[in-house]
Length: 191
Image (cartoon, rainbow, N blue to C red; front, side, top):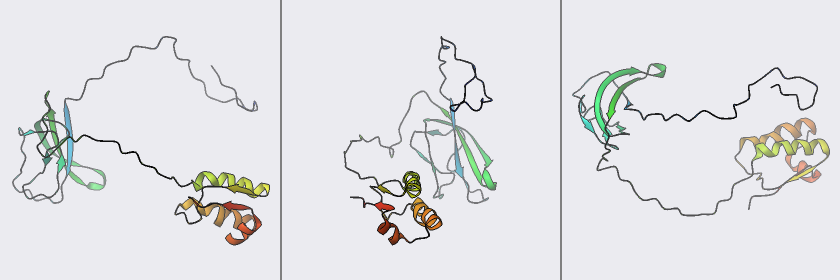
């Protein structure tokens, strides 16, 4: 089937096949049998390792390469360490790749607690988006004026510069205060 252009002026160059009336049955994907964690190595010296191949780990357990190593990774699964190998990542950064064969039963580490979460509703006021408003402000500049609410002139958003620094200085060469006087732009403070 070929789609026609919205305006009818140009015929698009893409084609696609229709989906069959009966979709194929969904496939079940088996869970992974192992997980690999990347522990950052800060030096090339190799003191006595605190974790060895064959060690059992629990979900949530902190895994350090060495006894005095302040950095660690947290085991995301319960299982047995099956391999520890060097790995070079982006920009030559070195890691120890710790592979864990996942057990059927999951055991949580004592330091890893599952806490019951509660929902605490709260009211939030979201500041208006200068990026989205810039289209309306540009349209207002071309048509003679526009009033846009829920925008703060003290906002830290970088897109606030679009109407003030770019659009109006180029088109009208006027300052921010002149914009308010001419009523080309009205910005109301966020409540």
